[in-house]
Length: 89
Image (cartoon, rainbow, N blue to C red; front, side):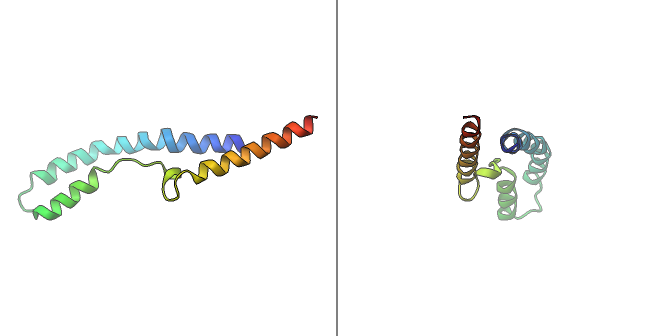
């Protein structure tokens, strides 16, 4: 059961979430084009808005402390596999 939960977390974090992120980028590119061609905007404000639009997706489980989440899940899965192996003996 733990392996299924970890697999679902990884599928969401590394497959589904980046796809959704890139689907939203189309609207961001349209907005970036409108910002670039609006003469009423201050150049610094326009630059900050464009910088915010061109961020890349960073997986949620790799933010902050890095891959500690995956190391912890690896330890849990290893412990679970070892205990199940010992039960069979």
